[in-house]
Length: 172
Image (cartoon, rainbow, N blue to C red):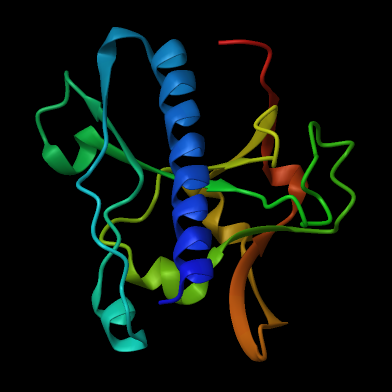
């Protein structure tokens, strides 16, 4: 990897970590004493396509219910995303400001690689002033959509924005 690519990769990692840190702060502020927030071990980035497909995704944040005995019911997986500055909807703050007919939830392949189906996705705008929550229980409303991306066709799950909770961040 050249210097430019390495620098860009580090910037993307820092940007991703900034989003996860904010999500943790917001969750801690809102969940009370019933849950504890954990961050699973971070796996190194995959180099080849085969390595990427072999890696499973443990989620970005785990909410663990301290009062639940069954482990499967106790852990809620939260996936954290952030729109890039060049995204057409990078600066959304409310449902009314989201002008597209749908919202990308996750890549079809990426969702298949997850060890556990996410409880929710927290998708931040570029400036970290608002986020959208897509709950896993809305899965029946998700649709597959193909797009051309970087010279190849990628398949995503999308959902109607009316099925999403939009939250403006006032202060932490």
